[in-house]
Length: 185
Image 1 (cartoon, rainbow, N blue to C red):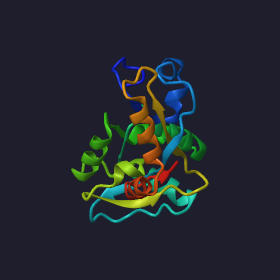
Image 2 (image 1 turned 90 degrees about the horizontal axis):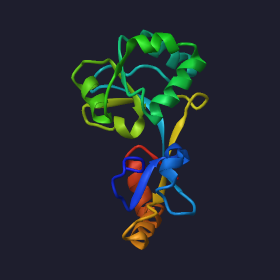
Image 3 (image 1 turned 135 degrees about the horizontal axis):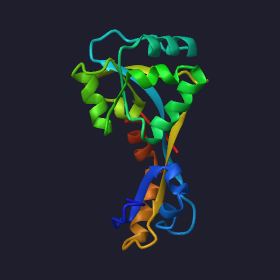
């Protein structure tokens, strides 16, 4: 969108996208407000035992014991995970057991179908009836991807786009954001 050349009126993307000069050039001058944030968590196939991840040590052991982990290393969440794995001293071990997926829905599919033991990604992606969420990463290693809104510089409907951004920060939208596993701005 912001870097693809496809016309858009409003983009809600990971905050880091707006740091890219080419993407930022596509957005009208002014702020790009944060509208949602999502932490990283773990899910298993529905009905499978939920691993213990309430402490950093338990999370590390769960990740090391897992046979396979579905994730998307080439994503904003994947970049966050790489840093967490480095901090935990398990980066090489996780590279060997990560089953790289091309899109969020493939993470769910891989675990639901038994192709991977754990789904490790943004909690909003893991909300699916075929998965059971074990929980979020512990606070001391948790990283959030923050989604920010930007109105296109060449928007044909800039006032409508701005009104939608305002709606995204309203109580009804905040309720939906929370129901989808995210936190408001």
